[in-house]
Image 1 (tube, rainbow over the protein chains, first blue to last red):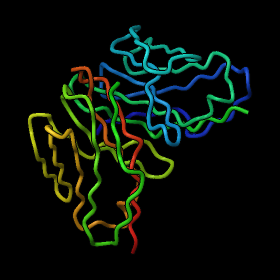
Image 2: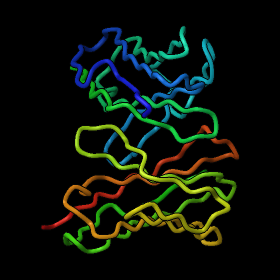
Image 3: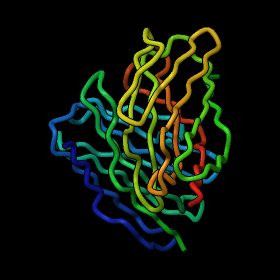
Length: 111
Length: 112
């Protein structure tokens, strides 16, 4: 079974802090993704990575950056957290041309 | 731009069949997916269908694809209370297999 692990289920941070969300997959997948999920808006892609050190912007990259130094790990960084980044964040991984598999999500609150 | 639409809510009685519908706009979609999300959890892949198929069955799940009308449906036979969740339809777009557009999800409520 594919296992995608997000480091925290719940996280509370303050406005202006630098926030790191971590995601690890154990299936040697090439592609990894970060989404945010908000009520009524579905899932929106923030960034994805198709190889180590390679990344591509998704639909809503503003205010976020990513890092992929190792194939199994994909980090989402909020450079200076703001209240409008309070959301559910979902990581996914994918072998090329196969379905995406998701982690359990991190519910992030910015106060 | 590309869009995926679903109805917001469906209520059924335990033991009945549920049918969740989805319409999409990108005719070049390669794959279409159904994901399930239980409260507080991530998305669980339920099933998917390749665009050159019109039906796929997997135990209690049946997926129907009408490419002409760009309509996808998920039928759950003998619906159980454990099936209560949000169901998301998603399509690949732009001819790629790594980019998905998701619908806003259908909340399925199963009444005992």
